[in-house]
Image (cartoon, rainbow, N blue to C red; front, side, top):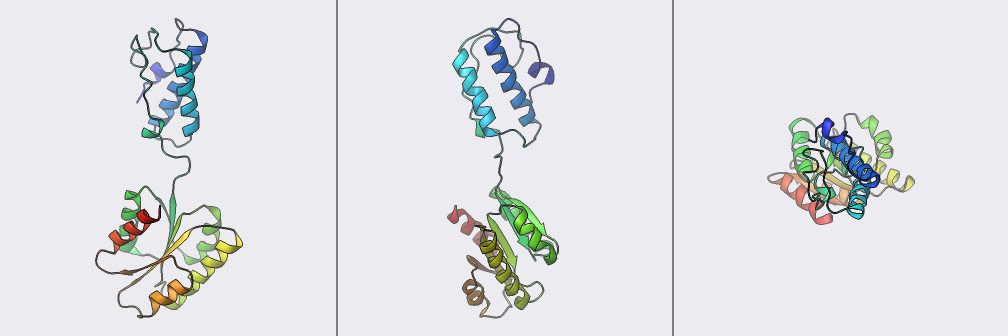
Length: 209
């Protein structure tokens, strides 16, 4: 992390333009290093480009920020900035350890997870965020109710012009016709929750990118 005393230190020996550019870059980096997501990739890129344009070499007493010769501007902004809009998945109906497994699989792929703890919350959750995926456990608590929820999701997608993909899943002991029924009602993918299902979930999402 860039220390506050470095990020805020006056840069008197440097021209006004260069000093202002350094302050902007230092402030941006300082906020980013604190783990906040309020800094846009665009603002960091602009700060770096401005600094590139005003000077290549300079001297300063700014300690570890500028060491006295060339400012290291070969920084890739996306190397340390999270995206302004993180990919998100809504998980409906999964309980207990199944929930943990879904979260683990999707977070490895960089997805944030929103959990619908009650099916009554789904209507509000689905319109309050731009989800890339909705993962629906059809056993909530019965496949009949799960399929009805699938119908409601498809209606919401059409009504509110939403573009999420639906991954439906069920335990292996469910009705044999459930996969065909779910896909027929609009699920983009169906997974039997059997051996290796987490890897199959990950592969589907990676292939769809």
